[in-house]
Image 1 (cartoon, rainbow, N blue to C red):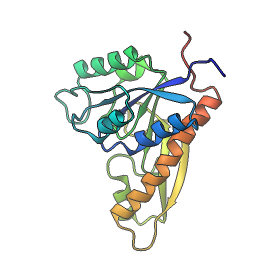
Image 2: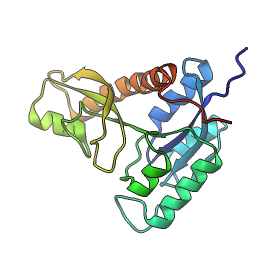
Image 3: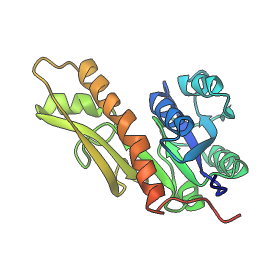
Image 4: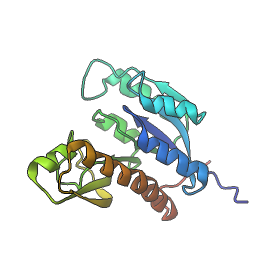
Length: 203
């Protein structure tokens, strides 16, 4: 058997955790040559923390601080410390609803990834599936991208198209986009690992 250390993922999320579950299952099933080292959330009762417990993975709520849309300085330092303590190689955002600032990103340069429920650069920000419906587009989808200090402005890694069907509601369209996300995210991270873009830190 290969003795090389697997890529260690630090997953951060705020919500139900469906993308985290897809990643954890891919790791457990051997389809993704990585392991989830820690799961962190800014919401104490979030689904992602409950799912992490179901996988028997280390998971923590960390108070986000005084701002609604970003971490304050003390919270940011706490998240960075927790991720470093877990020796993560890459930070994977799975429905994390706060903007990360330069201090956080510089702690993990070129190693923070997000998935967004639209074909960026179209429809950045919140409720992008509703934006797609309101604009009347025929195709939307999801995008895996590197994270920078903007709102969904980082360099695109991979995308998956999802058709907008006649009679779609925001809920039905969102569900199909989420189904595509659960396939694309582990697949894309796996591709980055196979190409050597993401790899374990030297030990």
